[in-house]
Length: 372
Image (cartoon, rainbow, N blue to C red):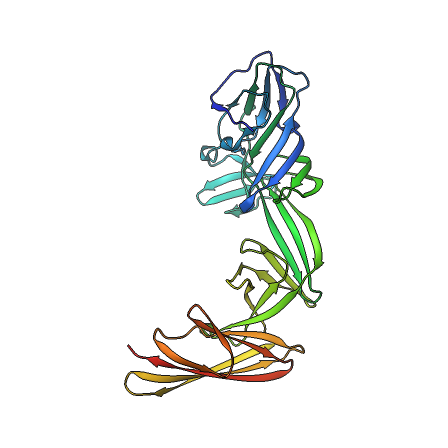
């Protein structure tokens, strides 16, 4: 691929072929890391000339991202104005989710629906400007010494993003993966082919309209899902938080993971800890109750022994794995003694307990605290 770009305002030759930005064919969307998408499409003129003009080039296209892949094109020129905030002046007509609105304020962003009269403060998604005149918009001019038969253009488009989404079904040990593509631009893609990040697999061709989200399933299969429950002493909650380890999946903190069981939707994951287990933030299981208490015994003027006791009740029918993180150790301590095996994760002792269904379990440990 070669990239030669000149920014200027240019007049086109009478010996040129013209077509519209909406007339691209063989369009592909190439999913990139961190939610970015590159667009690749071919423009074929009705009549071949040494100069090709693609009119009405969207202002949402990042000019610095444009690459002309056709080897027979020696120069291309961008004609028109880049997108900037000067277009966002009060009273302007804008498009939001495909409908016309009046811009009331830019800071904070306030718009009013021209049909319904609904006022929206800080709308989510992209705002598009409706042109105040009938002047021709941006244009991309391609030139070569020989007649141009076609041009393959590669670029990024503002408002076009993607993400991965997983649905976990705990009662079936099943996982479903979806690709979510959001087109918050004003460009319509017809019969578009989507290339997945690994470069070898594709999604079926489909249409992607402006201001539209498309959710496409990638796979639906059985998986090894182990449920753990996390109890952090510092939170002072009676119920532990749900944690899942999913075998065979490479998940990271940017992926959305929704969880379901036989009762329905449970919650959504928001991250992954260092042990590779996803944490559901704020989803506490009330069928498991943990009560803790501490007593102190002074051992002279600088030392004291602290004894910690736990009483765990599991009201579920099945056994559960409970991990207790005692994250309240003082700065100076020693001689931690426990009835249960534990591991140190950083400066925190972690106790992993198996609690049978419909049962109660007690656990104790102690340590020596040294005063400063």
